[in-house]
Length: 173
Image 1 (cartoon, helix red, strand yellow):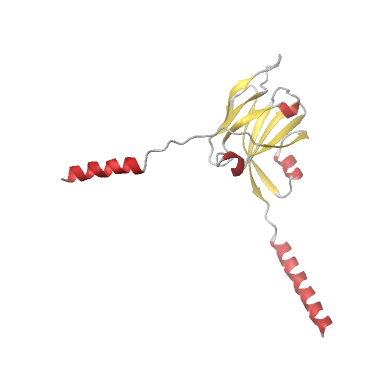
Image 2: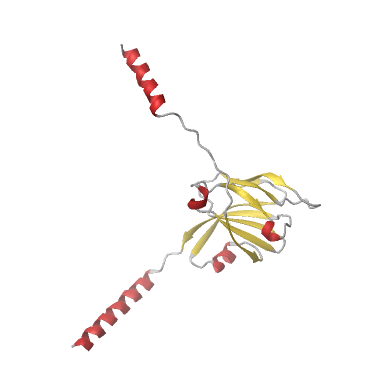
């Protein structure tokens, strides 16, 4: 009798709650812009002062993996020995928020968000289209956090609001 109940419970469990396989959708990030120079954290933070960038991993040609960041399905166009497109994946504990493709004297910045990646910010396509299809010298994955407003700014702001309130009160009397 107990065996029968167990079999029935397992059957209904499989019917009502079928096993689901995890799928990783390969996505393209939102192209931000092309910038001159190198893609250091300092350069990115100067472009976006409200964000704090943390480099997760960097892969330089001819390598295809480093620090949990891997490149595959590489495409080589022209006579260059550097790839011009491919797929990337990151296996580290953080989520990739920004992805940089460096080619020549410029780099292209891509933003990956939950909205365009279905919560899968650790796998995507890359190419050098915006970089005149030059061969990639390296790619870098970054996570970001917002830069907190210092406590002094909050105190100054609340003090100014208090002074405005006091001056209004005096004018009304």
